[in-house]
Length: 202
Image 1 (spheres, helix red, strand yellow):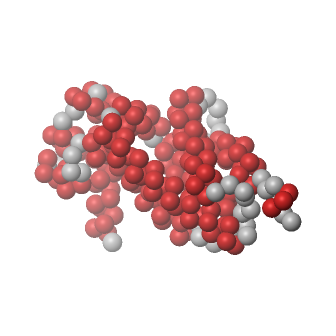
Image 2 (cartoon, rainbow, N blue to C red):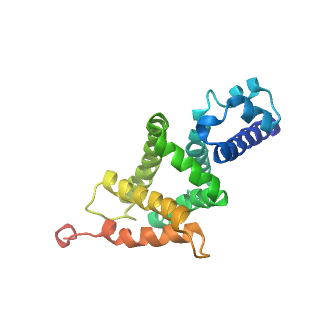
């Protein structure tokens, strides 16, 4: 267990130091050797954690999904689907906001790079799959009633999530935490998600 924690700490160190270098010099002007030297590790050690430089940018999405999977177990007893989604995605956003300036750079580099964007879309699909499971379970248990299909609801929630992430990064001026902003955005669309036509109630 201790060894796994140490490996995770090293990977996190490489990620943070690489992002700082990207911010300072520009992504294209930073080499793997520079990242390794800044971290105090051998170049070969870098490749034990990331197969190439582009993978550093993808680590944000991967680590967020790892945290999501951990929290799914922690909050599995939460029966209200909206509260479960607010809690789970709110935890991801709080981690994102802890390194706000660095994360803005990650997002901008992902958008800039077509290759990385394509790879990051896989993480988004995995996130949508987790949300779909939550929504389908809520429908089966009768805690969510909606005329909308699961795919559409998942897409709306993902939209609120990324809208919160981007607006908080670019326009954040108040002292409210990022998860508070996400809950407000989700509340604004949740009524539409749960709207049930009268004929479906009969």
